[in-house]
Amino acid sequence: MEAYFDNAATTKVFPEVKDLVVKLMEEDYGNPSSLHQKGLDAGHYIKETKEILAKEWKVDSKEIVLTSGGTESNNLALIGAALANKRSGNRIITSKVEHASVSSTMAFLESLGFEVVYLNVDHQGIVDLEQLEQEVNEDTILVSVMYVNNEIGAVEPIQKIAEIIKEKNPKTLFHVDAIQAFGKYHIYPKRMGIDLMSVSGHKIHGPKGTGALFIKNRTKVKPIIYGGGQQDGMRSGTENVPGFAGFGLATKIVYEDLEARIVRMRAVKDRLTERLKALPDVYINEGEAPHILSVSFVGVRSEVMLHALEERQIYVSSGSACSSNKPAVSHVLSSIGLQKNRLESTIRFSFSAENTVEQADYAADVIEEILPVYRKYVRKK
Image 1 (tube, rainbow, N blue to C red):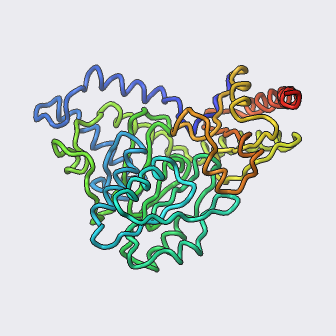
Image 2 (image 1 turned 90 degrees about the vertical axis):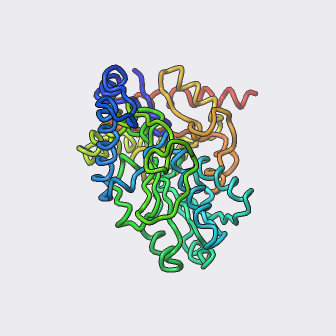
Image 3 (image 1 turned 30 degrees about the horizontal axis):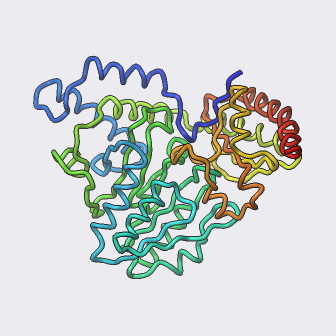
């Protein structure tokens, strides 16, 4: 049996999405900037994808910029907003458990002279709201906090964070990296107090190289890519029409039966959690997201466990696969206070609605079999 439990890294493209992408590559391949019919046909798909996202988020399609993925969306939101609003202040706030596409961008902004404040989190990865309230001041132009943590599945209280920010400084912009939340929750940015929001297509069975950024109307953001002025000048470059069309279709499919999909993901997560909790020296790093399960197998290094499971066709991650394939101590696990023996032995299982309870049982059976063997080997060494 094969069990692909690395869906937070990427998902398998829906068959319908694959067929649509191929169709556009072979038939509707025009440049959407061209004035002839082929160009107009291609442009229709871009418009339709923005409308699908706008309908789901309850926003205007003009408030959506299509991008190459979550990393570009985060970069455009953070760099673009910081540069556009630097006359209003110099202070930016984020958390200590953000994805590298946010934390690395913050480091870049620090090199430009911006002051970046990093919020602490508790043992479950939830940001310190009291610290947030203390840190937001009249000089704060931007706050960025992720919706769902990509490593442990912590779900941040986004609406409460927005209320604190806006009460302290109504002019402060609030950016949310919703890449792991999109396709798992109904998200309504305007109702929730979000000014900027990033999502990615390949996390929801869409094509890689696709994503979007919501920019609330009248929010000042400078583009970071210049050229032909596509997408109202916010993101120049010929649009990835096949990818964007596939992204739109994937969004539509996922949200048509979201509740049922969540139930299936939750069932797989709950079964695997129940089975693994019963094993000795196995610890669950609690996170509320329905699709992410972080587990520490004390006594076996993460990379060893990963490859042992791979030999049985069980595919997992030892951290954020979007960052690098080089093993390193996780800043997320360090921030929630895990001891060294758990830092070095944590595996992330991440699920989609296509996974089954039978796959969870298979993985649990394999782990129950191999765990004592690898622990005995380590002790001998």
